[in-house]
Length: 145
Image (cartoon, rainbow, N blue to C red; front, side):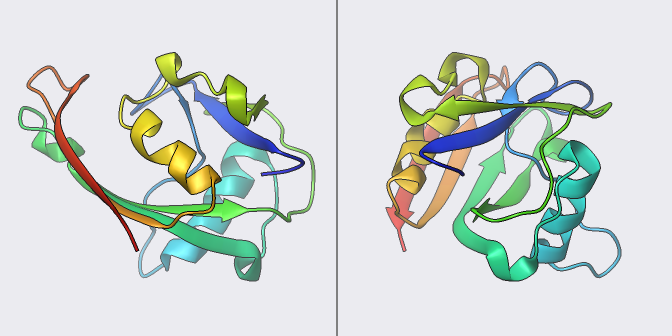
């Protein structure tokens, strides 16, 4: 986040392709979630974040009944300080958005339920169950922590 805007990136390949999202990925070996976030930000958009500049704002569990390999827990961090300017990579194309202009219609359908709360300063724990098509939410719960 910077000056009232949020940086999202268009996923160009793999899981989530064609959707605006935050940067991130899976840990390698015994990597912490913070170390994973730092590494992925540099790989995907070319910025260097120090772990002390990360703030964990949400932990979200996702369940896909017909694609169990997609089930996952996502740890959401915000960074307000980093080095470098975001650049496009083979995987992600970053772009800044005003909070009022976030393209929720081009994002995962759960994002509209938790991202505004996080941007307003809340910390959350959520659970999302997607319907059989894997593209709509069947049921969800969110609580502030």
